[in-house]
Length: 510
Image 1 (cartoon, helix red, strand yellow):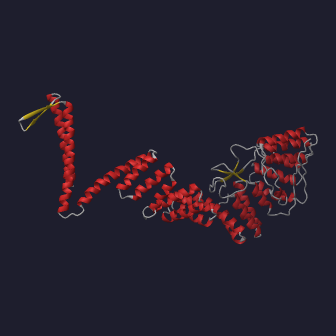
Image 2 (image 1 turned 135 degrees about the vertical axis):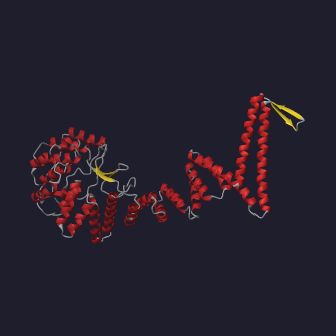
Image 3 (image 1 turned 180 degrees about the vertical axis):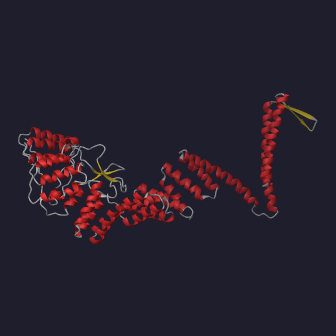
């Protein structure tokens, strides 16, 4: 306290002296006259006066330092054994903190190499590895020296106060390298240290989903809800996704009872989740509860009509004839009668019952107002069923080749399409990012759903590998079809036992 007061008094004295000197110069002209002991006078010009003033300031600074050292030495003589070491330590710390501040400024400016130089100097002067190691790691990452960054993060693992920072840094490095197995273990350790850290929660949840650790992911999701980093409605939806994924894994392992229970739980958590509804309905069918299965499917259809829901609804009574099926499906189709999916479903059911005029009425103007490969294929089947010429049928099929595919499972993060719903996007690894919608920019490709829906009107067909010909190849096929004189296009609608298939033979060129 006393030393600080002396510093303040010295500063005031210097300022006062400079003020007096400036006033003297203004009164007596640019020259300065110095009288030494009253016997000799020295007249200095402006430049000489400035140089003398600077010399005096330098002498005062040196004198101040000597006085500080002398004060520390006197304290040492009086019994303070650490007085001298503290004096030198303060000077070293002052220079070290100055270097560290310069390193932080260089890091903020994007000058990684300069930051490394400054922090190296600060590390020698300071005993603060928890700070200098963090700056070293970030600067090394900025210039792409991953080995140096990893070494700096490993130093942080030795101290309990900085262990989380070190684990998190190495975890992000492993994620960048694609080593998700190591990253998962590090994320679990980081989560154990700081379970409320939102970034660690999200990273751990994503890695657990990628590794199919659904039970662990549900625990992490529960932590996000308790810590307030996830809204309750989003938590219910994602918990349902995880429960559904867990049910699928249990089903693959052959534990059908546990799978049914997990599927029903997933449907209760999120009734609008289509895959959960389908699995729950099938579990009810296996348990001999068709009414509950129908109720689950109808509730989800009310939220989002989907062709797979119709498939599951058909499985409730697989042996019924086409007319009985058309009547039973009235419970489903009356929910959203104006939806395109409902119109196409009714058209398919009427084709199965060989009522082609009713199929045309059910389809309405969908092939012209909202043409998709599926609606155009249905229209071709209707035309063939009503006995139209092959040219008319070929025209609808040619349009179906390059028509939009309609709604698909699209990832909201990377716009990747998946043939079936999955909890994790296969392209970007996003969790719960798939939604059933049309792409913003339609692709000209042969759709996987251009076939009729045989399961709705009959038994399950063998899976067909999706074909995706290029646009030029499709246009070439259509041109060949128009020029060929030996073309045979046949679409046969067969109602044998409630099975409908549409077959088109290949085009034979001249």
